[in-house]
Image (cartoon, rainbow, N blue to C red; front, side, top):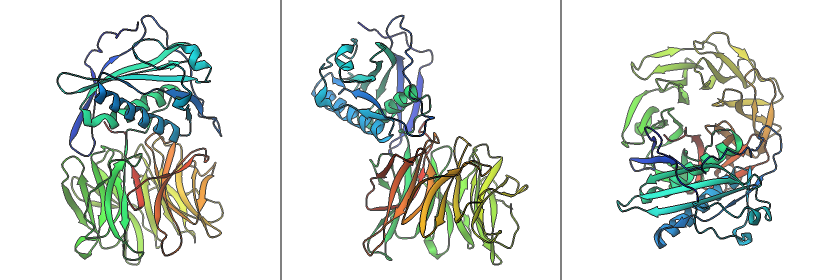
Length: 453
């Protein structure tokens, strides 16, 4: 039998919200076989085209009928998350030989080797006397016959989906060595109605498209929402009252405030890595330049000064550099400069026009939109402009945004025709794993949150 280890000193606690106030998810204990060494099963994600790792995810055993139903749903979310990453191939449950009845007992590894399962996930859900759920899981190396990781959580019953995302992240990290991205959210512009007359509402949802919630009522135009690095605030541009204003929306309190009116704004602001400033492009006197706004003092500072159009600024993850697009060289190209506006240098030199650059959270790449021969391409390059790679192309792709681990991009794609419209898509850095993200109606201008804490 497998027993729990002693409780971790201080208990690790992760806090977050599923659109309804703070909901604590407590990691109570690490679950391991006594004296067992950790196995070394791991996916090398530095390769170009990765063969998905076969794994089996069993339904979580429930202490009663309601807990068993929750366990089935949790296993389904975990399977979907891992499969959608492109790095894992969940084995069909119809092929399972062993039925797991006790998640605290080691599985019959031979039954899973027959299925070529490299990893096996087992778990259980228990309804506690105080109304909370106790959720535990164990990840096994089937061929090494060892436990890779085991954790236990306490949470409210209606928070089961978020716990499923947290478990997915733990599996992803253990098998790839990189931080997961499933316990995150997407803010975007939801569009409904006829083309040319669509109602646009700011919308928040889980990264897999579940739990959508409208943040604005559609009475005024909203554009380009962006997350704060604290994860609890969104900045966006709204034309409420007829003139462009920058708003801050607090996800926790649902309160919003006006940062200021910017009649000449050409691109909505993005937060600095410390959350104290936002950067934006303002058009004044016939040309557009990059400005920085201090959120504490509301003072603005001009960073570029050219007769061209400088727009779409984005901070590097350390806050020391800024990337932006400019036509100062005759066509739209990508530039990088120091955070104070000095040392401006062009980094894009390929054919076509480059726009909407955004720095990876890891700092190693800059994503961009590229227009070339009538097509819209989403690609990445290093901060010095080398290593350009196109990940996807289409009729009209635009607006890339990074997952917090810097492994996956989301963007929106327009389809032609009277009934056409924008939809959200994701693609990983290999370019082979491209998928549509479900949204209520049309969707554009996505922004990916940091991991929920």
